[in-house]
Image (cartoon, rainbow, N blue to C red; front, side, top):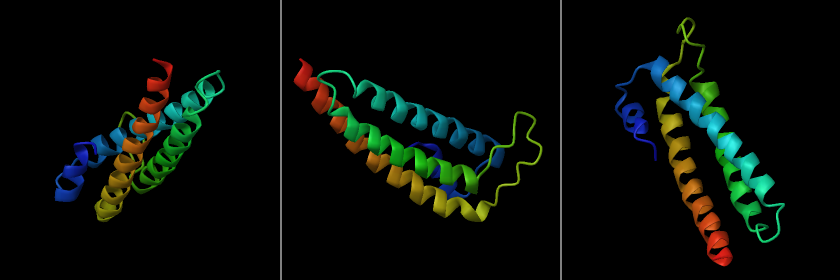
Length: 115
């Protein structure tokens, strides 16, 4: 689970900075899902479909977190995240962590078959 979730749990965080982190993580997880889906079309990589699906689920959760803590841009204007949403974000981040562990195990299994 990302270290910043401790800040959410403790309610001691900068809403702008953490909204930015969520936005970046959200984009990266979505790109990972797409890339794994692309790789799964290659011979011997079909097993990556499961990992791609798991990353898709992770990306969905991060999109929900983005709705709870929206990032409004580099100047920080309009970053009006409700700190009361922090527990929901922590719960979603924990779910993402568990899903990502499963996805990594799927990737490792495919790579071991290739060795």
